[in-house]
Length: 84
Image 1 (cartoon, rainbow, N blue to C red):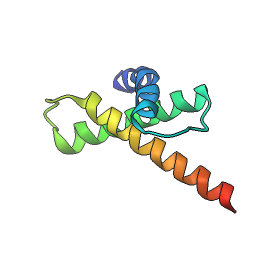
Image 2 (image 1 turned 45 degrees about the vertical axis):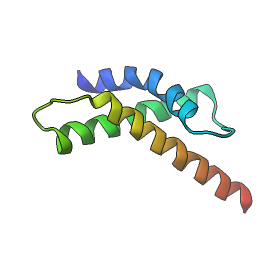
Image 3 (image 1 turned 90 degrees about the horizontal axis):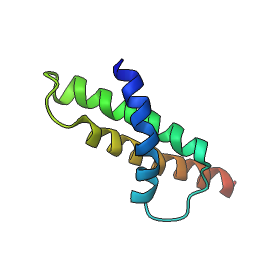
Image 4 (image 1 turned 135 degrees about the vertical axis):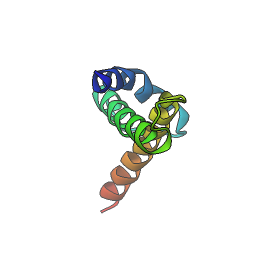
């Protein structure tokens, strides 16, 4: 059930991550939601399992940070593939 929650959180986290990373973005709406969902899953999982195993804290902040990291990686990969 937690996975479904993180996927739904990704619908909000994806656009928020794109907003927090300045610059033009070549991502579609679907890609934004998928990056948000993946970042939410990765960030939320890492936060719950490694940082606060007793499930205290605010895992949605980790979900946002995970999505921001994925947006930056996505941009870097897009730029490097476009340069070649």
